Length: 164
Image (cartoon, rainbow, N blue to C red; front, side, top):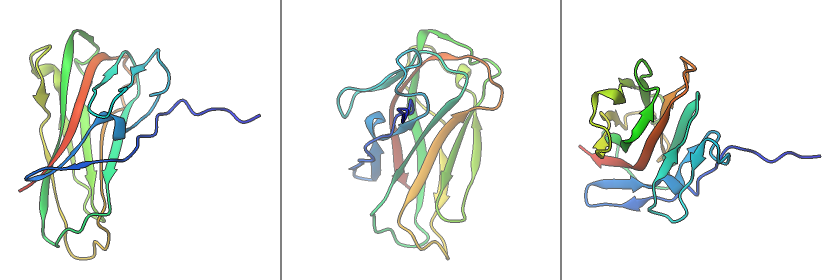
């Protein structure tokens, strides 16, 4: 008997903006996303995703089939907020990752330094398309998987990719 996956696979859609791209939560891949104990998934394209509780946060996405010139750079940032009853974020740093071919920077972000309930842009990570990158696909993700602490009360509004 085949088992159903409890991980949510996004629709991988994105919108073009004046300075780049925007990806809404319905387009993102969310580990444990189909389990209602852990996540409240968006019903409509521009709705936010709400984390109820997890000890393994992994949210990833990509944009592809885009024609980008070499040496183009993008700042990538998640638009997120913490609910009033958010918990578990102290000593639970969030890692942002982005990949464009061989170029894989990693940046550490701690969400507890922000005001609860206020929408915020995470610190951004910058990637540049360089030589040897033969694909027009950008991968990105947000992770808190290494300390296994339970955390909750996070809202994901969108991911912005802005040309620099």
